[in-house]
Image 1 (cartoon, helix red, strand yellow):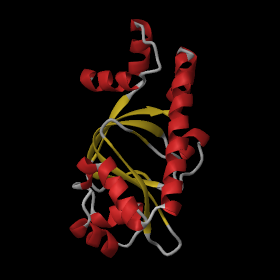
Image 2: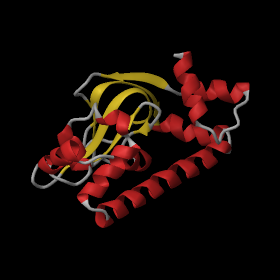
Image 3: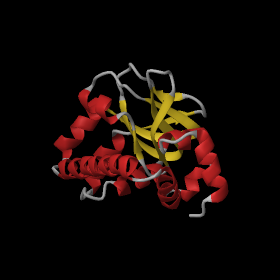
Image 4: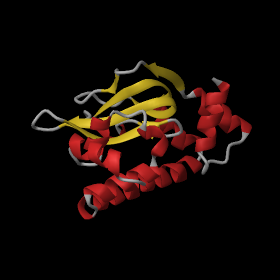
Length: 193
């Protein structure tokens, strides 16, 4: 667990940890394990935790009006995860988060997360930068979805995340890239990246 907490603490680069602050911070996190195929978060429930992923792979999705799974993203080792809007607003989530592979995560509950900001003003800076990165990432993704062709989206994603692609079912990747599984399969067989 100490190695996991070291990795977590290292991910909070904006925080200047002294030994007392580090001990207080580390005491707020618990380890959670999720077997493959289980929901970490279900739509309709309030997200109870903010996660730091140690191992595994998770898909973040919603169910559309047709009943189809629409993949919004993935999280894996070294990422933060959770239904952020639900967690921060303490309202029911519209999203599901599912463990695509057995997953080991560090989790902090809402009350303890809020207490971080009392521990040090550095957590305010970390939070602002974290949320800015999410906002910028979502903006870039929206632009890609409306300006790039299906093949360009495929190539860009494959270059960005080649390692995890072998672990994700093709139908989920196709959904994430907003294309049919058949189109994705055709690109996979013929397009070089």
